[in-house]
Length: 231
Image (cartoon, rainbow, N blue to C red; front, side, top):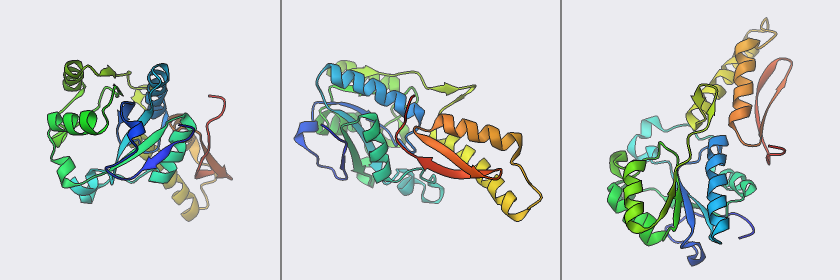
């Protein structure tokens, strides 16, 4: 598995069965995601198994709450590129439909994790939920995995200061920076972005993998992704 392969279907290579997987939206591929991938790779490589990120396309909210769909931080192709830079073997973008979203936690575990992925290991964050209405949590997942003989690891959420790293937090920080950019454009008297903007910039750069927030003359708001170096 020399590079990340993107599968946008309900069918994928049989070579990916029997691997170690992590399931989630992975929007923005931030440092919390990178921590999950680090543990994913450690388990997969030690057992000579493929390392798989399993996500959903489109975001489940597009069907469940179409009026409140989160603004995506990265497109699917860019997500695959960022995960490839981290060492993931495959990104499975499972087509989201009402049938999938109607699966109970037990049905999701049996149909997706056991039957389709044939997963030998799972790496999930402490807030992971699955199944209809988010009916399954990591405690239920642990009981399912124990009964099925599947390895499960749940690393603690990555914290920066008092707040966990999350896609929602990244969106909040981007909104702060975009608002400051807008104020700078419509009000020339604002020569500097101020302490609040500088703090938001620093937090954003710390949350995202391989990202720089570029700026000119006190206005910072352009997001530049690239392979992470030296961290």
